[in-house]
Image (cartoon, rainbow, N blue to C red; front, side, top):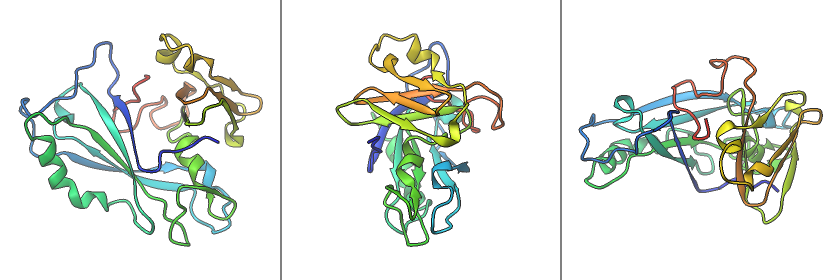
Amino acid sequence: MVVAALALALVACGTSGAAPEAPPTSAVPVPADGEVVTETVPAPSLVNNMLGDPAEREIAVYLPPSYATTDARYPVVYFLAGYEERIGMFGQHTDELWAQMLTPGKLEFIVVEVDGISALGGNFYANSPVSGNAEDFLTVDRRLDGVLVVFNATPHAVTVSVDSLVGDDYELSPMLANGSDDVVQATTWDAETGTVTVPARTVTALVDDTERGHHGGWHWPWDWSWPWG
């Protein structure tokens, strides 16, 4: 089973470039506050759920104070809201968050907030024929057109079929394909069946450069990209 991190998942992320800067610390003069961006993203794995919940989800992205003034890469924390909590709960702590980031020696980072709200209160981020495949929304869905990210936390390879991606021409992202990790390079994609196979204990990213909206490529609309791009 492809497993989502159900607490805080940490990955590196930032703008693409040949030689990205390190995330700034408080020694670098930066604005006092960060920025919060809210986006609605598609959730194909929630389509046709028995509760009639929408197949779209709002996410909130908390950009650190120095984000607008540097080309640095930033770590990203994925914050999954609790039962019956909608996105915005984390936003009650932004003043404290920005202040902590500006404390001497502290590292700045991006926070992406997601909720599991359903007609029953919450979906527990689990796959269900009733509330939809919420785990797949977090781990498999094409959260933005043209990028497919899969987390496999199991000790064996996992194969997942995604009907909504049948016929799409995904391939391992160039950074991973040209890197030195031969385990992640064992990732395979079958366009005819919409099936991805991921090695054990691996996070992988596949991309499809077909232009289909959302800026045509596989960048987030606020212009920071996944670390493998």
